[in-house]
Amino acid sequence: MENNQSEIEAFKAQSEARAQAGEGSAASSDYEARMVEAFVGKEDDPAKGFWYANAFSKYNVNGVDSMKWNWSWWAFFGGIFFLLYRKAYAAAGGLFLISLVSGIIPFGGLVIWILSGGFSPYFVYKVFKTKKLEIEAAQQDENQRVAMMKELGGYNQWVIWVAVAINVLVLIGVAVFASAMVDAAAQGSY
Image 1: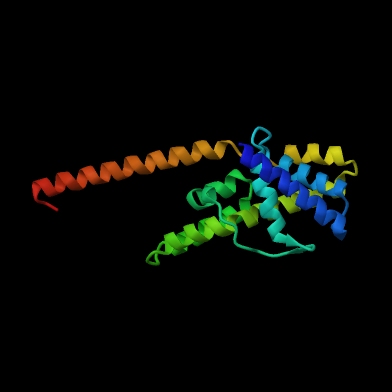
Image 2: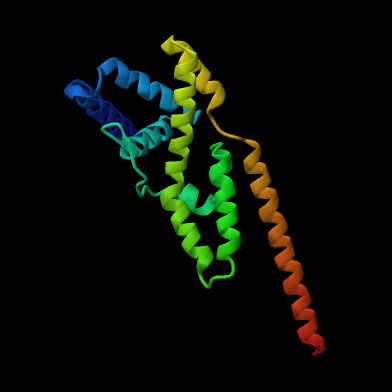
């Protein structure tokens, strides 16, 4: 925990140094950090806000957005569910379609998992940036903007339950299929 706290402080110091070097003021750096924390929606886990702030800073360099590799184990294992959890619905739909097509390619699913782990956080960044621009266009007060981001950002808790239910159903299906195969092999009709 101490290590995470020192990393968070180091990131804030870097953000303030960049802001003072001409990319904005320290106040705007603080505002950006509050917006990211509000978007992430995990007040009890400051490391999450730090992770996303660090990732988002890689995607936007000198005001130019670019897709870059940023590994997330949650995105790797969660795939579509990770994107739904983070409210990146269009990207989740695209990943679903790509996953369907990749199913016919040998090892295609594994490649999609790896690509999802590296690029899904970028799509979460795009959702953040879109919501941030919409909020800033609608509201002038920074505190109100942060409050609106808390309301619009965050995550979908229901996705966890859907993911668990689907995985349990798949495991039950695999167990039933395996049991049927064992029974068929034992009867010699396999």
